[in-house]
Image (cartoon, rainbow, N blue to C red; front, side):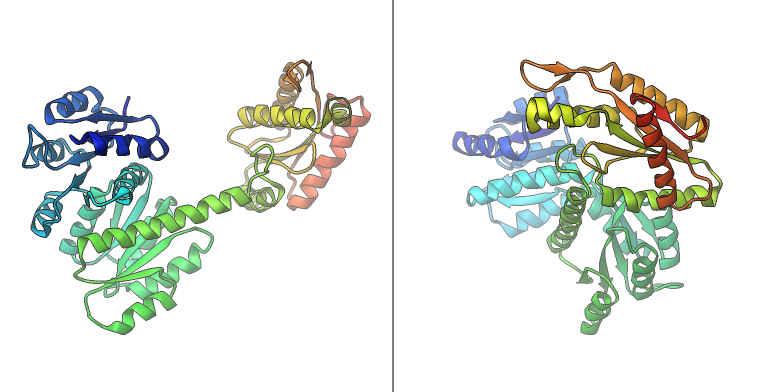
Length: 417
């Protein structure tokens, strides 16, 4: 079912939009060239449609009737038009359209399609509005909801900090300066101190007209600043730029935390995450175990089938482990070595779980080349935390891994027998 509806009556513009949409929106787009067809497509796909890109003047809807219809249906709408009439733009923005794009160039069409994709993505983005004025808070909430964000609200910095603790996925804070209990500057400082490892953008707001406020906000850790009252389109540009910057940073961090071959987490990410998980388990008094998994006789695979065959084998093992070990922490930590942290599993359960992993891998077949396949086995060393540091826990798991290898491989060892 389609996620995007594009309505345009010009054949030339449709050709451009279809060409650009292939790379921007993929195959989840349906096109119409008049209001009647658009309404039929809307009814057909209404459960999955997320955004509409709508020409303001259509043969059977010359005065924006389709825009009104879709807004009444609560579908986010980006208007595409040849009119640069600022009065018409302001009227449509007041009605609740997400954006107003003038047909000027190929870039305009690309911008409109990117805006559609952004609105779709925004449904997974959480934003916190912190404002003591009820009217101003509701206005900002309304604007953000027009762009499909998930919006939380707080009336001062103290309540905002509580909200951030309850909703760890919040990516952006929009905060007023002058508030009771904890003002905007104090909130920014508190956020940067308590949530220093979280990627959170902060936009400061103020209606006091003091030029020094923007500098103070930035110096205290905010990313951006807006004077009130602000233009709606400027507000959206600032919000979008901050959200996009956070998304790019998260993507870079995610790439840096992944192994290039298997796409599993790498050693550095494992060390950081495992240390945190270990501290949390010890604080709550919950069991936690670790396993080191090594592919048996991997050198033989490389020698016989080359490094490409070896890579195929490693990817096969990695995919199988990723599928079978959710939601535990798994990483590739060596050439043919994988490390697993099993939060909540005591010694008996960790052994049983790893034995099931070993058996499942031994039953699988790997296509190392187009003509050849092999069966692989793994040896696994398991250790359960006894108040250890992460290094000591992994060292014991490593010792048990060598016991499994010395015992003939294709075994699980935990030092208890």
